[in-house]
Image 1 (cartoon, rainbow, N blue to C red):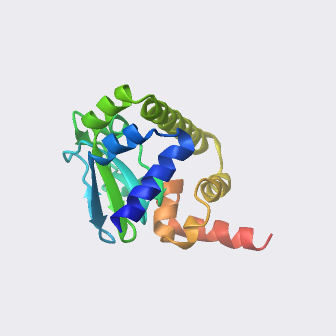
Image 2: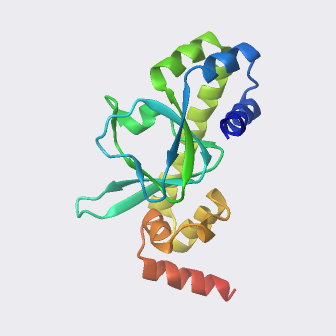
Image 3: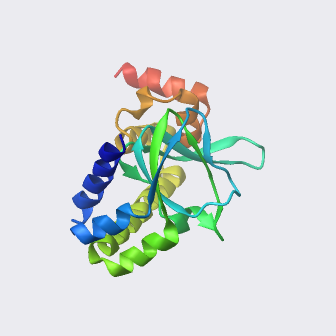
Length: 196
């Protein structure tokens, strides 16, 4: 299983910035594979974390607790994706968010400090890291604009575009939280769109 996971990670990185054999050998030396059970918290808000994370299989969600104690979803991650860089998710190695599995998941973790050193050693990993950061900034900007300027229907359509097929794999409660609406409102939107 680990060979398949490592090959998935290598393929993921190579699609963005082709790695040399030396870079891959160095990266393999700092990775660790972990299994996360469905509904298990992988990272807790305020918890200590110092890893970059590649999701090999499964679904994860990132969320925080509002001042009213409600869970607010800010992102979903599906298989063969990298989570936002460590420094986007933390302050002083303390997580800003909770990250929870929404299905049984396999992740590859690599120490953020060691990965940063490898980025400076291997130009392909530097290029990869830069592109990951650019994509995360684009996603965050698009998400912010959606929440501030678009209707619930438009946000729902954007969700379907950002996360193709995910609406059939997770609960409507999680989607509604991500969209900033109630599950009842989401149900109405889905019903009205199914009539079109």
